[in-house]
Length: 366
Ligand SMILES: *Cc1c(COP(=O)(O)O)cnc(C)c1O
Image 1: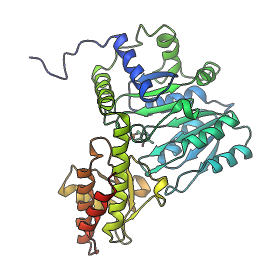
Image 2 (image 1 turned 90 degrees about the vertical axis):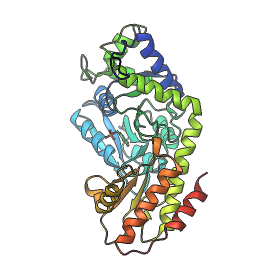
Image 3 (image 1 turned 90 degrees about the horizontal axis):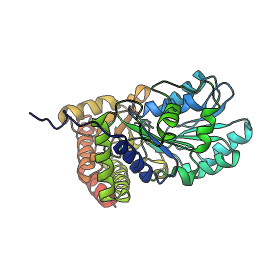
């Protein structure tokens, strides 16, 4: 008996290459795109270990938990790391990046997270890219949470290593990811004796054995399920158009923010300025005297399908995340989240106006 997920024909090299080309079109890049068969942490770590070493001085911009992780990897590679940390309720500015580069002329690597789903902020990559290019540093960008939700343009922005994953706004699988690599980044890797080789983390293996060979022979058996799911997800985005997918996410963020403000009860957007708030997910500050993790747990107990989560680690007490991405970037998901938050806040004895929240959300849907 056939099964839709089993007994799949092997995925050919040509098919694999065609999926890479589709990712390149989504990123509007002429750079090499390497699809990697693992969650996005695979190319995120692989790209750092390939390009950073004891001779590297890295500016590591921290606007949430992922930036912290990148700093740890960079230090582990022997790099000297200059951390630029901004409060998680803001975005970093190009001015701050320019200042750090001026203060440390030896910086030759900049790592940045575009949008951070865990904190709900998004950073002005185009402007930061200008500063990084003017300085001449290699520019590494985590665009996992921004791709599909807002423009991600590595070529226009001068990004040398741009990592994406399909599991957020693309509404795709989590087990496959991709990185676009500039010529400069390949050269940096080739010159790095500590860059992983003959390793699952290795980007150079893909360069030498896949790209330079004309993409005719794969390094190992491709993960068909994930590759086919990635292809289906790209097809769906192409069919409705990336702009429509991004507009859905922008609307979901605007509606959630406006709805939360109108709900009352002391609920507030966690990211203070709307311009700094990411289209992929909206973070909210739990009212004083409540605990975000408790509120979310009660809402999810009533309806496990709600796109709600508490902040991670130390943020679990104060941060509520509305993960309105992928299939949840809809008016229905936003309404359901606001209604559920209204119900748990009312149980706390707080005065909320769910009808006003839903009206405000509806009006903000663009
Ligand atoms: C979601 C996300 C990732 C992927 O990591 P997960 O732990 O699988 O969610 C990477 N970077 C950023 C900025 C993300 O928001």
